[in-house]
Image 1 (cartoon, rainbow, N blue to C red):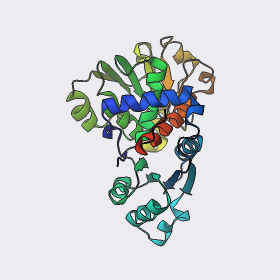
Image 2 (cartoon, one colour):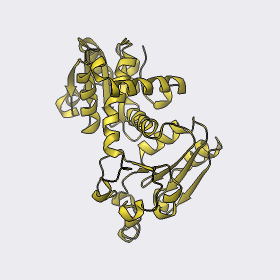
Image 3 (spheres, rainbow, N blue to C red):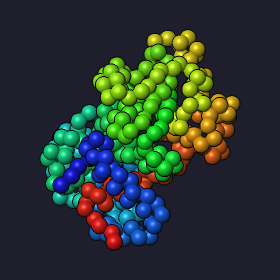
Image 4 (cartoon, rainbow, N blue to C red):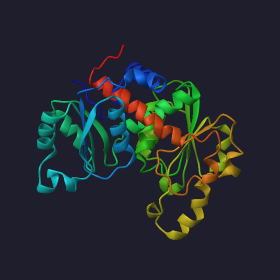
Length: 306
């Protein structure tokens, strides 16, 4: 039985197979409409979520399966003090597969060690969000046709953003990947990623403070939110915040085939005037999240569709 705690749980070959399956689901949805009939997905979400929880539920329903679960700790026996270990043992009696989000890092891993069904980490604190990374990889491969030979700009909160950290870890396994890290000094990528992941693996990268200084060289721009609460004082935030608002003027500096991604939700870091630009891929990215979760459910349940 296989679980998914990190995107690195999958080899490059397994990942390629999963993404190929997701692409087939995209183009042949009727072929998979009854693949999980009689199967149940438990969504155990100990903290609020909109996109991830609904994406998992949409994925299972699109496969012909059913969904049960809870959307906050308050509506589960966790409010009575039940442990994650006990909860997953009970869930194993009711469902065939479980997607778990938890505010404590490592909680889904603990659940997987006690579970009799596959467990998917749907986000554990600031640690991992593997299905978002799989979604990002599917989006890049589908829209760019490859996962190698790319210059990727990561913009915004690179210090605390778990989606950024996971994506870096996943992409360095592919040849000829280069990063441009775009952030204020306060929100630079952590030194352990800079040194132990990028430098150690001889991945070329450079750090810039202004979005305009990177736009022309990027194949992909991955935007994240710059959060006011991360700054030591208001003056620094006011000084920096407009550097990281993507608008039509900044898009005019980019390649014609660059794509813009964002894990969502956005606040004001991408102007709504960019939404109609054919290079804006963040809503397509949300749709790809359903396809990749469908492929993951089929893979972990070992369901083969001819």
